[in-house]
Image (cartoon, rainbow, N blue to C red):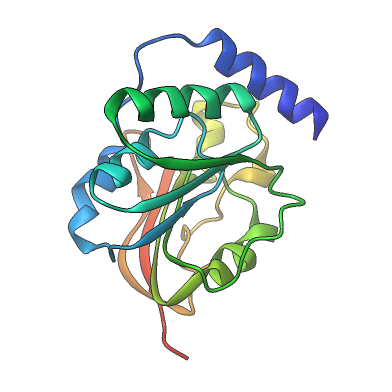
Length: 186
């Protein structure tokens, strides 16, 4: 964890560019989402968290980087928004169960965490997921393949959800997998 934290701290402390916009995939499909409480694990700078807060969501955003969350809090305050943030290493974080109406994950894939992320959602809750797939190594050869979705994208990871949007090979290079799904009532 310490190596990961140090790497992300260095990246976010050095990155002082203009605050990024929300992801276009989220913005485009926002009309499909269930309003309420949202969880955003591995949020980085949290541009998507700010977008959700602007839409009236109660947002809990977490990341391993203090620097990223500090910048997110500064930007939220500047915009007059509230986003609850907390530092956590997701490999060890005990996700609360059945608390959220929405979970969003962008550019972070860990198959071991999928069950925990699913469990955070209430019945009928939504998942918005966009991350790199197996084709990403053709764009960035040194990328660790353990963090890439398999062929077919995210649908196999969320086969127990009603899939509303599935883009297994999206993006300019076909190296993104995107999905929006609703947790089935059980």
